[in-house]
Amino acid sequence: MSKFMSRSQLTILTNICLIEDLETQRVVMQYRSPEENRWSGYAFPGGHVENGESFAESVIREIYEETGLTIQNPQLVGIKNWPLDTGERYIVVCYKATEFTGNLQSSEEGEVSWVQKDQIPNLDLAYDMLPLMEMMEAPDKSEFFYRHRTEDGWEKEIF
Image 1 (tube, rainbow, N blue to C red):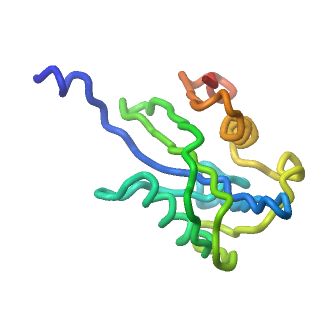
Image 2: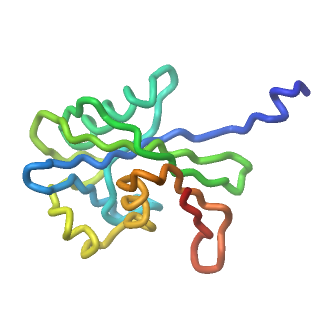
């Protein structure tokens, strides 16, 4: 086994995007039903990175597919990641976008809506959505890491 292979690990690459209308202080939230999603509840839209596309291209594509909005200049604001029981690593590349065009429309991935930013804590949020949002908006934080599972969830660290 080569030195490179011993240091590599299989990864699942995804993205998520906080889309904010700065004039109205509203953000796009997507509701994922518990019947169809392990990570259910309200969360920011996003999806998987496809082979051959950049992270930025993937978030632009996913946001359009899931919301009908075309985002411009998405800003990388952090990484969320954790080890899987299979030995793989799950990586979520976190973006924020304040420039967009189009009209909001839901998809088979979930219902999307504009929500006042200060009302987000009152929603039925997906697991750890609030601390993830706080990390995404903190200028001195850039990584949200789940070290391992505990009886009541995950042991998380924010760097």
